[in-house]
Length: 322
Image 1: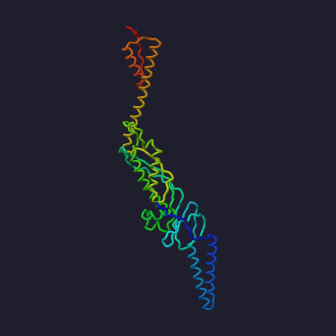
Image 2: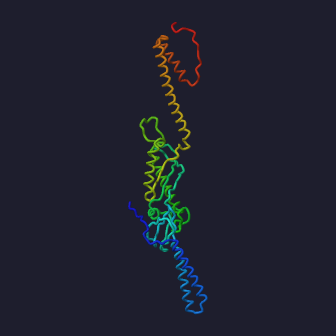
Image 3: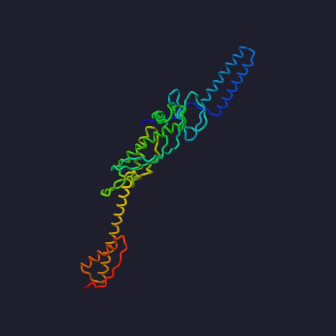
């Protein structure tokens, strides 16, 4: 896309110097007015009066040419509707008073978006939020290719020439929020919230694929905001949860999955311990067990090792061989 922004190349004068000159012109106009009032000659009073009016009008017009630019700010300059460039040099200057200016901020701004409800890839409703760091990069696109006036939540014309930098940036911030929400919905709909137990493939999910998904989210938002001359510094998901209507069900599902996983570990350990016990008894020839005795011993050990309650010992007073 063509970059139409360029630096202002017009003539600028030091603002302090021009302020002193303008003050002298104003005082001279006042002095000429006093002379016109005190003059006894008609022609002299007329000349002094006209000179006073011209000087005072010139002084008032010159006041409109002062411009103060702070670090991290910019001024988009227009001469009777024609774009004349962007002025970003910090300082106090004076330029053509007939050049109008629109104030913009080039500083980094932060958007902490409220969580929104979307459907993930599997159709489950989830709540997802994000934080976005952005800044203005192209002032031409921000002013002339985005209709900030219709985005204003106030009166018509709020985004006019006299709008402050805060007003214009707030309107752009609203545009950023809308586009960021759209990109977040698009990215969230491409991934599942969590792994499906029946699917053994290692697919990225919203819960554990944060780095890759954040990069994709940043790219999608940057693509959408490029039309407004806005650059995305960082975008990441900062809130992720199931929607309230299914949160309880999904919590029970996660609890069940955790219980199953824990049981698998317990059974795996119990089988290993039973195997080790039988092997020890056989190697050290402590006792000879037939298949029925081994089966009974295995059953008892598994019940003890896998049970939730504490086992109650039963003393066997008989013998193993009768």
